Length: 147
Image (cartoon, rainbow, N blue to C red; front, side):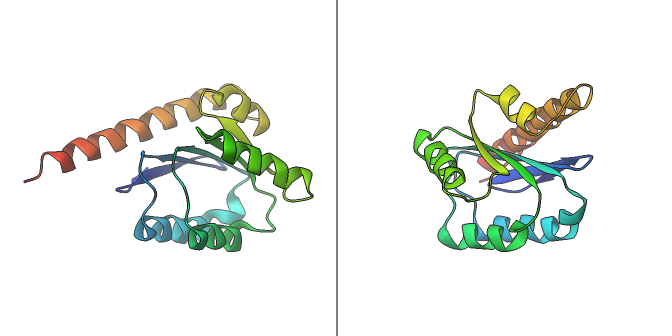
């Protein structure tokens, strides 16, 4: 499990799970994650992103596309933004990648169904999400107590 100042990520078998804090990812954090992703990309079949309300910069979107573009990686993006979900759906309708699908933050079940995650692996993914959230909260409380 990797906990960075703006998000955390971990792997469950051939799946990457990313949980964002309520702040946009810094370029430093983003670059670190992409470096790890480049190493693991060939082993991964799917990715679950709990994005919440964050937004990527144009540079970050391009770097991500350059890293995983053309791969068969299935990606479920959970976001609070109905606009972002609509844009992702429209891109798919217009012939864009159909291996990326948006979900509301409350629809973990739908995201895991799309990624074809079944029991008992589904429970391991939920445990990893909880651990990432706890790790982010702990890191946040540690940094808040620094003078």
